[in-house]
Amino acid sequence: MKRRPFAVLAVVAAVFAVAAATAGAATVTVSPANMDGWATVHDTCGAPSTGSVDFVNGPATPPAGVGSVKFTLGTNGDSYETLRTATYDGAKLSDLTAFDYWTYVSHSGSGGQAAYIDLYIDNNHDGVKDDTLTFEPVYQTSQGTVALNVWQHWDALSGLWWAESTGGPPPLFTLSSYIASHPDARILNGGGRNVILATGCGGAAWTGFIGNADKLTIGVKGDNTTYDFEPATAATGKRQCKNGGWRRSTNPTFKNQGQCVAYANHHNGKGKDDQRAGKKKHGKP
Image 1 (tube, one colour):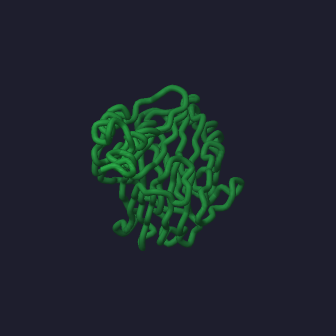
Image 2 (cartoon, rainbow, N blue to C red):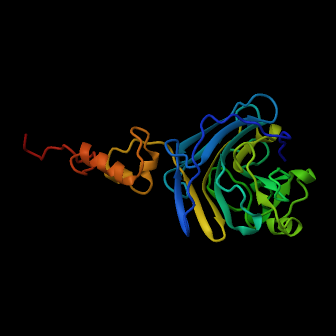
Image 3 (tube, rainbow, N blue to C red):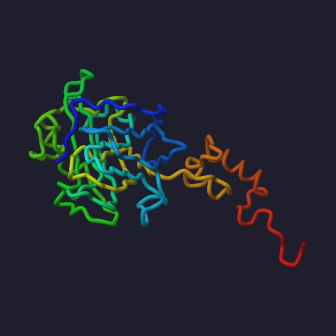
């Protein structure tokens, strides 16, 4: 079980634009170069935070791309290390059609924990937070037990949640049962964000936790967006510009894939990759 303060007040280092909604299924690459409406927030439920949030390669083979977001808590298990987005402000819980993600745990602390999800909820559409709903992998016995050093998939849409309003857990409940009791329940921005990938805020159970998350998919009325968390890179060849690679480049940064490819073409011999650009033929000066 984790604890949280009555109100989470956090200082966000930068404000990022909300990603535009796209029809159907889309994959959005989130990296330090292009956060697409996400922000890292370092908070605490007790003593000052000893944690961090980083975008890294791996670990092992992530479910999407080559990297993931890494959460490290340190000696204070009440550190509340999070990655948050404001994209879903006002979305009704009853309109959610997909909600799943993957986790990896290198060190689980003493509580068998993994990165979880917090949702700020407005139950009567008055713009005021009425509840916080939490999905924790540690309580998803029907989906498996949290394991070390392996990527695991968690279905939050059909899984078990608990509510701040009832002092849980327990009781645990499904989103569908919560919607039956709160038919107008919708996601609400709190501190500028509403969907939160979180770790910590649980005392000794989280002390020393190290873990990752990736491939978060959220669907609203069948419009699914998958968020692929990736580390920053320097795009030096046009191949690195593709498949969202232009979003990860930090030196330089690009507005789109075309700009990245144009840069690579200009600097690397009309589009040749770095490994080939400028190479001399064997036996010739």
